[in-house]
Length: 167
Image (cartoon, rainbow, N blue to C red; front, side):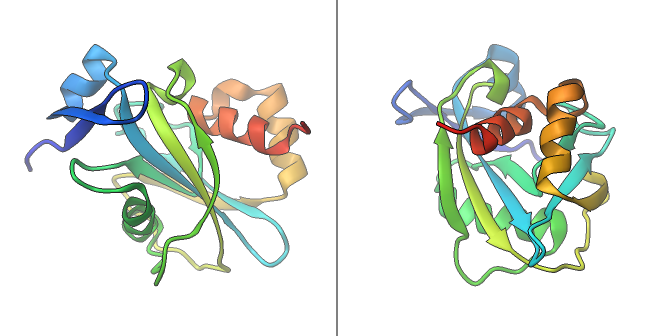
């Protein structure tokens, strides 16, 4: 399998080049990613536990689905693709954009668009990407992130704090 190619962006999230995934991560180059938060009708959020095979944050809890924007791809189609690839959720349109986060150390130098959608599942989890997944009450996640932030991928912990902190 050939290595993924990402667009490299500047501090204004404008494409300035392209590079392989390994080089982007090794050199800490700015690039793009999406995170999709899936909620059910009871207001619970589905979180995935990342596979131990992942090169970043192995075994950490993370957004329902997340991934890099491929070179030449835009954020919205990437969000649709990632929920299909990771949890088998087929969306007919992009989910709702709820937040943009600037590239920083917590996002591994990724500009993020965070999306929200609703589904009851069941989901088909991609075994190379995800160890397991589970529904959680938002207040449980808030307490968990506050008490044990290292159990989460750093980008998700940042997203959750921004989503649940007033102001």
